[in-house]
Amino acid sequence: MPVSAPPRKSELSESVRLSDRSGPTTTPPLAFAAVILANVALAFGPLLVRMAYTGPVASAFWRITLAAPVLVLVTLLGSARPRMPGRGQAGLWALLLIGGIAFAGDLGAWHIGIRQTTMANATLFGNSATFIFPLYGFLVARAWPSRMQGIALILAAVGAGLLMGRSYQVDPRHLVGDLLCVLAGVLYAFYFILMSRVRVAMPPVPALAWSTLASIVPLFVFAVVLGERVWPDQWSPLILLALGSQIIGQGLMIYALGLLSPLVVGLALLVQPMVATAIGWIVYGETLALPDLAGVAMVAVALVLVRRGSSKAVAKPDDRDDERSL
Image (cartoon, rainbow, N blue to C red; front, side, top):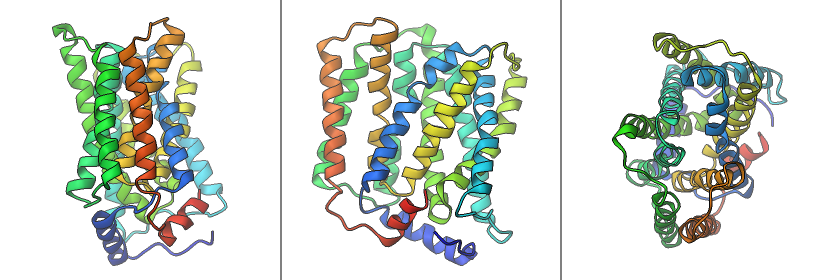
């Protein structure tokens, strides 16, 4: 795809305004597959965080720091040769900077919460963006759901309750960890909102690269202030975390953000507790009861319905171009 000059400030503001008003009107198959694969990769994150030989925030710092050079190199050597935002695009720079800081806060809060509560609670609360991001789509971006998508949302809510409700534990010892995971979910939804705006004017890889760079310093400061052990004895879990969660998981997620509605992205996050349930069964020998299987089935049906609910819409030309620019 040929390189075009960076949009002027007025053009960026207008494109963001139009994006907020209407949102993506279709669900491209490649983007839908990308958001599903993204959440499968991200579901292994909590396991790798617990395996890391550093503090929880320090593991987030290494996830970002190890991934950043790869993302920047791909950005600079990519066939499209995307440019950095120009000096006149202060709004785009601000979105990238704030998005990176929000993502740093999300990772820091969630990684601490993972070690202070149960895996089930961390997965449940950490993915509260499942319903926060679609709410943004409904109320702010005016991306109202179709009847079929509304049914999918209800099915997903019931399925998530069945999937996580049985294993949720109300315990005062987990209160701090639970609250940190809730905070992480809110910050994750805020990050999605900012990056969906960035994706109006920037391809996925550079968008992820620059926002990733913006997360490095905050996470390092958080880890040092908390007195965590930063330098690990073993690198394998951290390398896998950077590759699977940041490069593959977030890379596919940021790509999908430019093409899918907030509702589709939000419901796709429920793939993570589905995979987490499978991990618990395979790795830890956790038994699956009927509510677990019913929850998985309902979430799977919801994903099929939300995909079909938007498949009849006509794809916009810029969406098709964006898929080719991956």
